[in-house]
Length: 101
Image 1 (cartoon, rainbow, N blue to C red):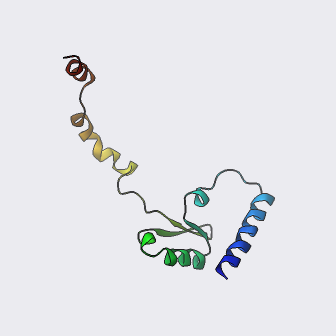
Image 2 (tube, helix red, strand yellow):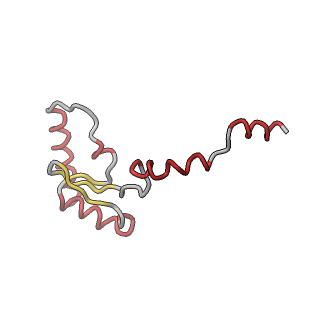
Image 3 (cartoon, rainbow, N blue to C red):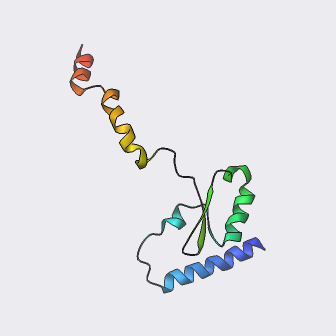
């Protein structure tokens, strides 16, 4: 039954995509484990069991997705980490002198 529902939904998605003006890539389809109704996404998450334990269900434009969690370190920590960078590098000239010796 689940396979038949998926096949039907997939045909509808393809037909809708081909009939409309698709402006570009929608990352929900390429970066998600499951995309569709809330019931479908929750079912996929349940079937994945512990492998989907930390995956997030999100909704946008009436479409649910099962995605990876946001990484703990990202662009929002760049400003906090910036003062550490100069102390964690070896200057190029020092590196050249060390390798030539």
